[in-house]
Image (cartoon, rainbow, N blue to C red; front, side, top):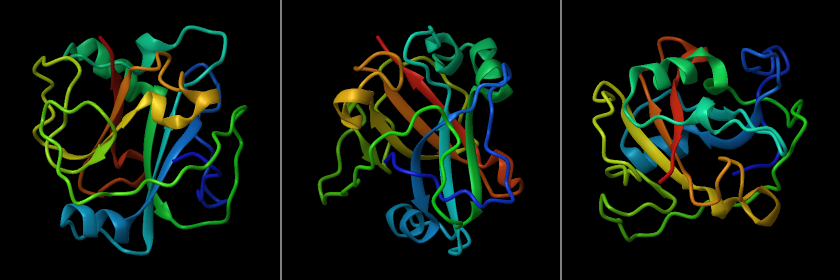
Length: 183
């Protein structure tokens, strides 16, 4: 989680519709994803997840999805971005860089009501609305406070949870969806 992105130099750094550089939040090598989820994505690729983030400006409504199609449309307009890409050299073009933290998987599989950070299984939603995401594969969820002291507000609220869903890699620039929920 955090650190510099390994997005190749020949790929543009993602921006939101207002022209703000998105903040890199997590890098997942495909061999790690394949092992953790039992998938068979190309192993020479990685998934990088980016989100809108700002220390002073309100942005929660641009990254939150509780089941309303209008919320999903806002997110898919570019306020978060999930990119599949070949592994490049470390770089950061955002105004913010989250200190790198290792994500360690345990043998314990948490139940669907668990709202902390986890990978695989069933998502533990903060809000239980119908989300219309059955065509996507749940990958992981990230608890905002797990990002460390200076970035507990990465999802605007420290108790917000971010969810990553992946789709078949037909389009590298649209490898899935990332959104948050809060209570």
